[in-house]
Image (cartoon, rainbow, N blue to C red; front, side, top):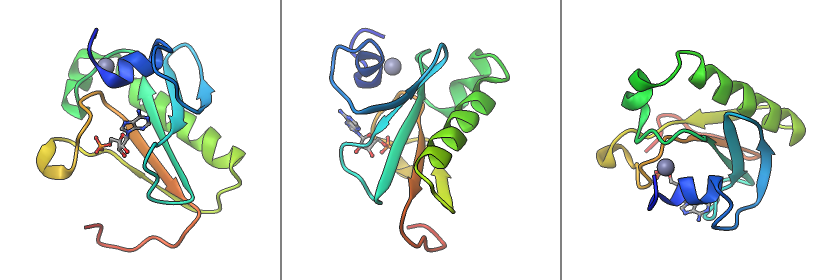
Length: 112
Ligand code: AMP
Ligand code: ZN
């Protein structure tokens, strides 16, 4: 989508610290990290949120998780958390589907 921030990052119109990319996804450092490692994994296809996966190939989310695993391994993370916020009430602020990968510090439960 033309005016979507993460589509612009995927098109390299806005700079980001990219740590992985392939035909279907891109992973880059979160600009406001909440942990020593905080990487966002996005599909190249614009999907507003998790619910829009209904319009995507069934294997897409598995591909995003596989990319998260690759980044976690490359960062040497022994444990990590993956999060998808769906809707403003859940904390979603960018409406292009993304998986947060957080690691490098102790994680607490339940999340806030
Ligand atoms: P969410 O609140 O789940 O929609 O997550 C959006 C994330 O995008 C937040 O953690 C922001 O810090 C991050 N973010 C916003 N703008 C940028 C940007 N230009 N580059 C990297 N991360 C960004
Ligand atoms: Zn987009």
